[in-house]
Amino acid sequence: MELNENARVDTSQVDDRRGSGGGGGMGIPIPIGGGRGGIVGIVIAVLVALVGGGFGLNAATNGGGSEQGDNTSLEQKCSAQDALKQLDCRNALYVNSIQAYWRTAMPEAFGEQYRPSKTVFFSQNVSTACGAADSGVGPFYCPADDLVYIDLSFYKLLADQLGAEGEFAQPYVLAHEYGHHVQDLLGTEAQMRRQQQRDPQSANALSVKLELQADCYAGAWAKNATGTADDKGQKIFTSITEQDISQAIDTAEKIGDDAIQQRSGRPVNPDEFTHGSSDQRKQWFTKGFTTGDPKSCDTFGSGA
Image 1 (cartoon, rainbow, N blue to C red):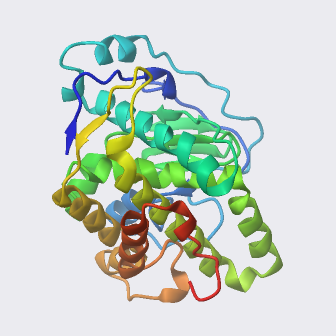
Image 2: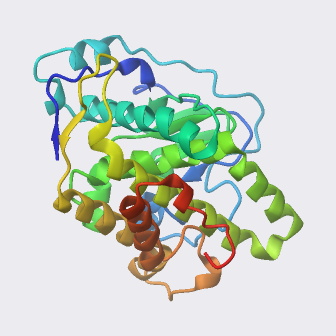
């Protein structure tokens, strides 16, 4: 994977809240992995997995994630000549690429206009409209405020704890969360929640379908990422290799529900799956990448 050093990093698509935090809000967050709001909690604490619900966020308080970050230092850093050596600047550029893709792909595939969403960089804890979150939640999307949240230290834990060391694991994680944003815009997420309420016994199976679709959307972005450009028309990626895609697939496999259950020392129980098995996550990311078409990502369809 090579990023174009001439591409402009648009930090306005990021809300840098590192060094601040808080609580409050209502809603259901959608994290990247299963267990206590994500991979990190279950790998570190080996906790009993929660199925459905708030994934470890405090959704019992009122208020919202009205807190705003300060992008001044991030903007300065990402305007420097060596910006792409910085983890936060690279991730901001990944966000730029993902959103550039969906601005075109969503109208073409679904006839709906894409509405951009910011990614919130936070450290340790953060206030969201879905409640108070800490780093143990892992990356997540909050439908109540339409924002993606990530503590960038997650990537080190992802590499150290699960062995997903490849650089392309990072844009895959972000593309998965923006897949949830697309589901929110299309009404897929709200429809799934209503189905869960009508049929609680199918709540986990429906959650798996939602997560696998987000993986498939991430694959569709990866297929088209080299065609994305900044606001000046400069390509963001100059190349994405087979090795990069293998890194994304490896990450998808390592955050499968069965892999996480095994790593935590518990027996594999498909009834507790909320995000899909390693094979399923690999299958649907690969399908999105192979077709390059988000319309192929109908995990809710008959026979999917």
